[in-house]
Image 1 (cartoon, each protein chain N blue to C red):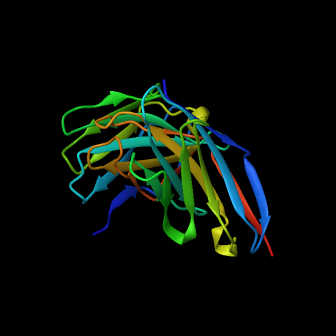
Image 2 (cartoon, rainbow over the protein chains, first blue to last red):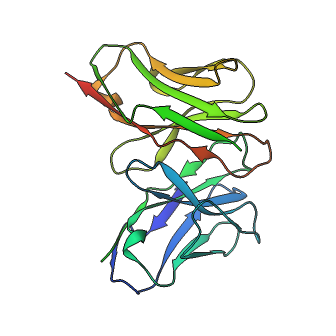
Length: 113
Length: 114
């Protein structure tokens, strides 16, 4: 039981390049999330998927797109990376939201030059 | 709209001393409240959560938190700090049973002095 896995762990991009961050969970959870973590700002929600087949914007969606490929997988795409997207990205999942515990992946450290 | 405020971005205590990390929330309905901990270079993991049962919630590693509705607070405490408690701590709130979103505070970094 691996929990929530993320790939890659580290990535360096040049401005304008694109990439996809992958996330998978093996806990049969319905809801999945993408956050970014910046110093002094806590975690900010980028996008979430309450259930398979649905996605919704969070607090900071600009510059990102997501795909809920199936119940297990939720990917985050940067179409044209900008230095402002330098951050640590975390994927999380939960059974149904609300009072349920969110389980986090180990994170992806992204640097955009 | 729900929100969370963590007072103090950095708290330093001596080993063996009381740990107190402060969290105040804003919610229009009875909330669900959480404390998560993040060790260096790792993801977040749940310490404890309040979901309208007992107001004093016990979590892992000797931490506990008390829900005080009148003060809209959910402060995290531990009687005696250990070096291994050094980490960043996040308070979070969700106010709907079926909601998918929770809102995180900005975090408090806890340092332990030998």
